[in-house]
Length: 373
Image 1: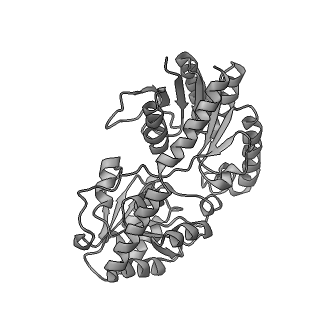
Image 2: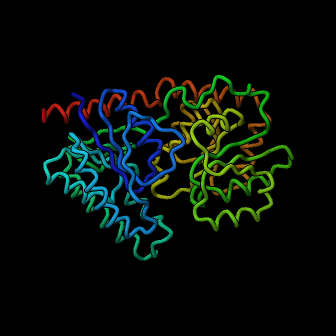
Image 3: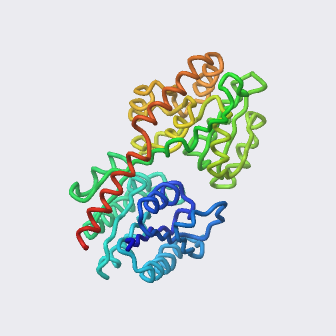
């Protein structure tokens, strides 16, 4: 009889890349009966082997924390799973409650929460350090209850008990974004790509301003993702560089593959915020997996990855002129740029891929479920 697994989130969409596409679908393929409790999401395609239990979407953070958590807890209990795996720090109390009901519980830590809180624009500046300290304390105490901790970066891993914590990095699925029908690199238009959440702290202002320093009229930046907040979209539309932007809005996985298959390079220009410097952004590895060079922020960790793989250029993400120079270099050195893209693809095939990370997740599940067998 199949072991039943339940993943839970009240923050991420039901079609989240890490939760639904990577973890839930991989676990289903490994023979588990997989349920996902998540906010109501428009799903372009469904994997029938993953059972999705939708929650009403809560727009208000306070109601999501209280009412959303309670609804998720009730749905989770009804599923009667052998193991519960939740993905949001605001669900820590729910995780503790599940433990008190005798359940096996895994906490998936996607972000460096204390460092992330320090950059929350909606929190008063004076409160951020206090809230970050409280959040880290709650997280530390909560994780003492849980059976397993899954983290996405080595730095986050160090914050948790070593005997129950594993590192499952957010690397791309082999072959997902490297389409066989992609346009030959030399035949592509003068297009750069940014895919993901479009925010100020992820460099959208600097990306668009960089286009003003590129005089080649055919150059364009393809943006795939939603702006947050909406007022930021209105702001950057007023920039001179916006006329070279092709804004696609939200794009699904197939559309991402198509866009990257037409691009000369991918941009990942996060600002040097505390939680960014040690992050390993999914989009960096996705660009590499699509076989295109990257133009990335010159953080020490990112330098190790990009220079180690010889797959792109590093710039000051706060300097539009420097970003523009890197973009022009890519266009002026097509053979070297294409070689960088191929180097990145090889690095993903050999090291930075989900298939290797998934083995660690399956080993943790096997270990925890055998204990209660």
